Length: 346
Image (cartoon, rainbow, N blue to C red):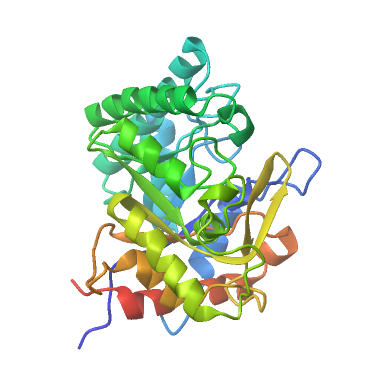
């Protein structure tokens, strides 16, 4: 029987930026992220591609079509394809999705620019699959001042963004992360998605972030696992994951493989989020291959095939770790196990 070749295995480039700079460690150059991704190899298997954040200094969302072509040429020169893109929808260039009318217009415009880039890359043949990722660019604290009103505003902005994305043949995926208002618990995330109500709007699940949904960080009343949960109780953890994924899996159109030690962490301007751990971190609370299956298979254990690539998201690792070849080989090995257990062959 041939080895599974789907979903394709991607690495993310934005961990070279997120949590870096502004008094933290230096940004890791885009070329360096590509170099490390392309060099990783386990048992003859390599990464198939990269997911890219469309923000400086890696790439300027206002770049020309010629700049987009240069991006495609650069990535392909490493033998990689491009998958999902992250739209830079945050202030000052973007704006909170529940902000003023002007801020919300800027948000939608940043989505438009990102969708244009996505379409051009598709046309160049280097981007066979993937979505454009967004969030609310708003804090849970600001959202909590008027939950119903702010959810309505976020949904209105998301609908406008979805309509723009549809003009480019793109889907938008809202990232489930506890630091984004209206998306900071699994229930508020579903409320926002339902209120948006567009066919090209879905959910981006990240295993490190969704683990914290179980704990109710930033919205304790929505916790699934009890306070002071005993992490050695794997049966309860798996039942919690089943509850969570049953609710969010139908929305999921983009997926990040990751590890988490069950704590909240942030560096630089990216604060109060899931602590991404190395794939082999002894403090990791997830069995990566097993627990990815709750997202990649339905309640009957059947593959959903809802996305054709999966991505490793390892934000806020120290640069010393990120520049070690062994780090990327360990990550790739974990992703290969996910594909061996929950992939398919075409």
